[in-house]
Image (tube, rainbow, N blue to C red; front, top):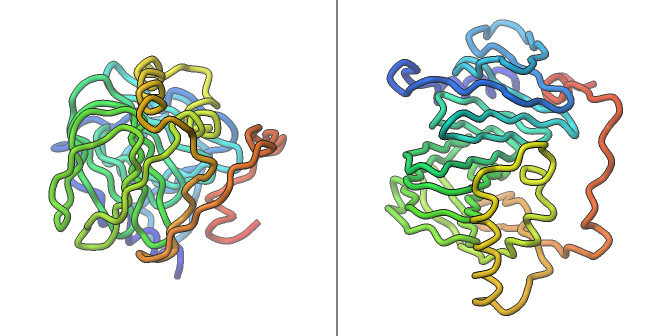
Length: 263
């Protein structure tokens, strides 16, 4: 029953693929990555996917623990973090069920971002992290970016690099905004530092860090956590002993399988 609900939510966001543009292609994979065909609704049937797989709109992609993927072409970089589930309706349209993703482009584009409850449109260029929250919304985190974000109820907002924005509800509106420590996020985020390729905007992120330090004259010691409801946002202390990522799992397991039916 739970599996069918996930499929129903995903199918809602599968739009006209031919009208939206081409699908991204998996160019890098670490650990175990599974996919389930959303067109098959009568049974659970996942398969392990590998590099050069086209991430079609009918595929729900799931990364296991310490697993991640990357897709890049001449204009767009996409990354999906560990223990995440997502569907790419096209190379400019992401549906994120859980976990985190990164988008990066030096070209001005219009990018659609959706989760189980909320959706927004980013128009511009830059490097953005998106994290799904338990309330069905997501955290929109521009490391460095120029452009706007738009929602049905919240209207259009200008993006500020280093300022996280909560995107909530259906119809979608904006929650609180928080200035985050870009350097701290850069050190702790595996979406940035756990890939062999360097994103093309890395120098721009460095400039954003320098500008933020001049403006804020100090660094934060806290990270923004999950949002379990639209009114409740978690925060926690980022201690000095926690800045080293835990070791990778030697035996990656299927996150998709364990999520739906257990190990």
